[in-house]
Image 1 (tube, helix red, strand yellow):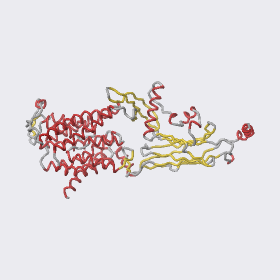
Image 2 (tube, one colour):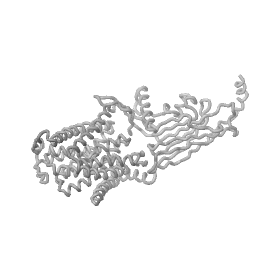
Image 3 (tube, chains in turn brown, purple):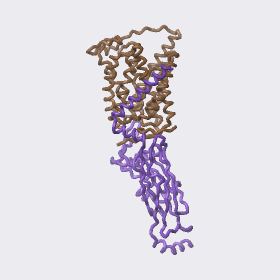
Image 4 (cartoon, one colour):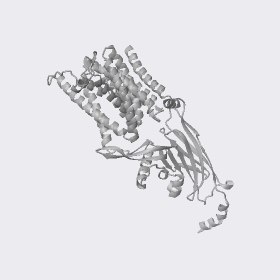
Length: 304
Length: 254
């Protein structure tokens, strides 16, 4: 079923895009990630222009995180105060990201920067997750006793001034730390079309020292608003949000997300994390090969 | 020898004649891009009017037809990747002020058998004879490299192509050619040019405009995104919220 995308200016097989959304949604429901890190590269492999892919993937992540945020609100798993600080940072980050996007686009290096960012971020996060989950699987098989890890924030965070109390997370830290984290994730959302959950969750756990009960909900809260802002920024600056493409992706991903959540309830979390780590590493490897191998197209055309 | 005599005898007749004329037409003057647009097929057809209404005889050299469809020109930057520190990055670049966004040529015989290089360059016949008007001054060798890169890239995406032998000529007077317009085509004013060629010379040429535009919902979306960016963005965000919330709400019911 071919469908013409009015902003991407090409026709795609609608079923392929819905299936892509379904697959990504399945993962996002299973692992609690937005799935933008998969959508953008997959859309680019399919032939969608990178800018349109990043802009439209952002709105898909918005949709994928909505129901998650509601679910976590019901369980009181969202630290709204922390979320608001992160979102403020995210808005600043999206604007900064939009400026960087324009700069990189003009110099012709946007594709390379996107590729390198993917390889570095996904490679390191995927590696860490794989290591952690393999350890957890060993522990669950009774190989070695679990080492209790003391929850605390990074010493750098403790050195920042103006401390606030974040009651829901049980933290007494400077809001500058989550603000900067929000800015960083906002830039990534704008450049890569990712929600940033895969960066945010480990950063909140290991840098801010937040408790696991509020991490996922607050991360989803931040993702929801930052991707919504990124969609707005894309719509007004790059004008690359393809609403038809976004709707196709949403159709698949919201259904996939619900199915994934059901499945996740029955699976062992450490195996799920290992699976996610492997998927993340596979995407990073594919991106690395794209950068290191001689590309099919030595030349590329841009608008002057 | 016999042939030379025949030509000599016919010469006064031929020279006294006016040039043949072309009456070209296109199957579609407007191509509307709607939701189901997967490309279009254009039929370019017409008649060759010989002076005196007489088709060329068996012993005369038949004329050839070349048709060219060109898209609106655009200014582009062509970037060339090279390996820097182990990864492929865009290094050199070249600007072009007016490169055609689409170019398709069909001919009744391979173009190299019809006209020489100079004529090809004048009428832009063939992918190697496009006038790309580079904006940045560069050595001819470098420029040629970028020209080839641009043409090769466009050819791979299906936006540039040559179809030798795709023009059929019936009875020496009627011609027709089918040319495919791919779905990736840009919108704007296109031109369909028809050339009548004999003995390496262009005897007649005619141009017909073709408009390609988005229609209905597709046009509405494209113009909204461009002119009402804030409202468009809000709607995109709203739709995403609605989908996410709706799916969650529906799911909990069952």
